[in-house]
Length: 293
Length: 95
Image (cartoon, rainbow over all chains, first blue to last red; front, side, top):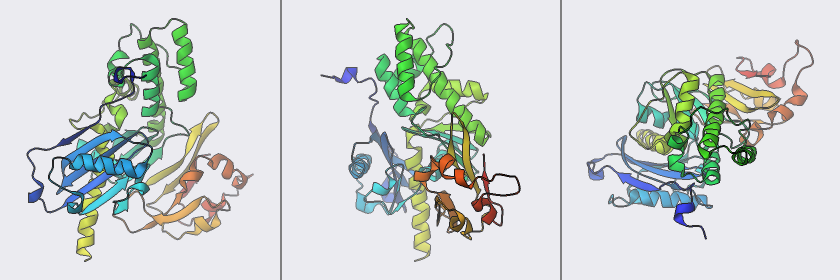
């Protein structure tokens, strides 16, 4: 039987709300729900300000995941779904958000969300999601000016990192710091395909590599892979990373080193960027609908 | 907006780039594509815009090396049908 302790891939799910804010003072209450391949988030904004959010794993049923994330974000806020004027669905499961007024691509939402989180100086956003990654260029309003989707498979993403955490027995939230506990940076694993990299890593472990070194080799491979993606699109300052991998210093610092650029830091959950962008678009769309009567 | 659809694999980079700032929403590229991988939709990357733009269908994005293969010209004088059909020259292929 697997116990909680042995599930190294399991990251913490949680919800948050701003205790200083009261929805009763707000004119526009809108929400964004990002149903991703691995995680789902719901964000509620009051007049374009972040009010509450939740972040949890996506289950096998997208509509249920959307509902659960929304309900959890609403918890203890005194709000209910009926009071939310406009809901935008985004992410892989965006068409499966039953209560959404509109579905918007995650590329548009991440651009808009990163603009709020990191400020209007952000020009390049790298969204490192659960099962894919995207390089996005935006203008000062968060509007997408160029984008590039990832390659064919799930390599270089959150799911791959979960597989490695599990293989090496290192908790996913500690992967970053553990990957720096090496005497010398090892060469990157040659394959970024999760399945091939896993067999390569198993080989390295059998050859006597300590697990931190294997982890370092995988983090470098992942960093190198996304840097190639970014370089094809062109990187302009300021640069920011959204998504779950943005919390993994082992990958982030290696990307920064290879790019020669520092990623912007933020005191918000980097996984909510998509849902937050959705909520902000929801407000803009609600206003537009009101104007048109 | 420079919209890049495609992928990179061991054999090379395969991207179709559509410059939506040049696009005049005429839809001729969609008609010209014999494999029907393009479709006109309301701009999915700018929800506030009402303009229609062509996009590469997501299910086709990872297959363009093969799907677009038959359209690849044998000499430099000829062009792919989607590129040729686009009067504002908004479409480019990376390979």
